[in-house]
Amino acid sequence: MSTVVSPKPQLDSLARYRSVRSRTLALCDPLTPEDMMVQSTPEASPAKWHLAHTAWFFESFVLGEFLPGYRLFNPDFPSLFNSYYLSFSAFPEKRLRSSFSRPGLAEVLRYRQHVDEAVELLLESNPAPEALRRIVLGLNHEEQHQELLLTDILNAFFVNPLRPVYLAEEQVTKVGGAEAEGLRFQAFPGGMHEIGHSGPGFCYDNELPRHRAWLEPYSLASRLVTCGEYAAFIADGGYRRHELWLSDGWDAVGRNGWQAPLYWTSDNGNWSLFTLRGEQPLDRMASAPVSHVSFFEADAYARWAGCRLATEFEWEAAAQSQPLTGNLLDSGRLRPAPLARAGQDENPVQQLIGDCWEWTASAYLGYPGYKAVAGALGEYNGKFMSGTMVLRGGSCVTPAAHIRSSYRNFFAPETRWQFSGIRLAK
Ligand SMILES: [Fe+2]
Image (cartoon, rainbow, N blue to C red; front, side, top):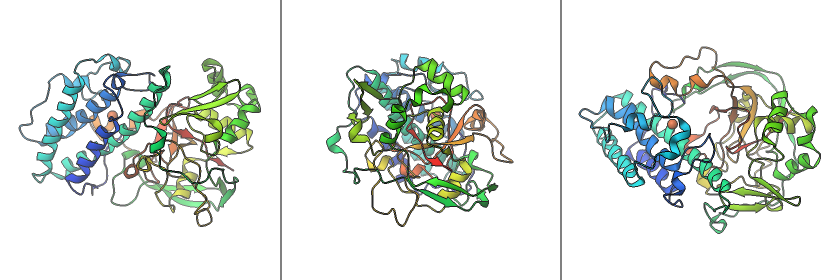
């Protein structure tokens, strides 16, 4: 994705660097070395690759340029662990990542340690502002890969007939609110709004330039669509009624044989949902937000419900005044959670942050005046501005330090392996 534009990086100290880097390793604690080799869908990467690639980012964009005398850990790694930066080097096809049995896990961990020692040396030597900006970018990049690591493992474990459990349910913090609150709509007046990042903190280049957007009056649902509500759409023939679907969406239903969200399985009409906490019966998840739906499913559900999806500008204008709290990775739940009853009166629009990324009706495009930075880092975000839709708000596997109201995620409209859900708008 993109590069740091803010002149005042968030990096307070070595502490943030160490905290982010150690969390990536901690997320691998429940995994075996064999788990870490699996690449079960073309969108995913093996956990071992995530470990190496996030080290590669610091080596390639920070150390080589800013640490005098830096020695590459292995001269093959700059191209081996490059993901998609054409301006940097050639790189292997993505689908081959699970075939990298070498380097072994122990060597990848030594690679990370080698990079950590060098970055820490750099941080202790009063580095240039651009070096600090790149380190902050590397930490944000690593947080994105923490989320990907978990979404990729969920897919790997779902594909495995043994359906392994990433983390057992008894370790879950209890979540309040077993039943979904009634869905309400909160009206917003519209008018002229400032959209895009502001302030001194980090942002990606695709959140800039801040600019004005005109909004007509609109309403947003008070919470996300639940699994129980989505089950009613399925039961009403939602996947068999072409009139509910965009043309490309209807084609995707036929081509993929979709009958329910990804990770839903049916045993004689009894639905179960596979999660990082293992298999869950639908009735236990009925009031939790529905997740792992494509843009097409979100759009069809909204049409069935007599509503629509919000534009990313409507979403951001509503989120700007909201606290950046919600069911994020730091909650430890690792799955979307029912809405807690407390706090609904003070805050009429809930779950904007966390639980599921919310598909918007907006195509992912550059804001007016957007310009990617020169060089390889300009490939981070800008070159994906075709054929993808914007999602907002973060998910239950997004690190809390990583999300903000101006944050723009983007995926192709058929994508389902992310924690992607639905908020209705009118
Ligand atoms: Fe990456």
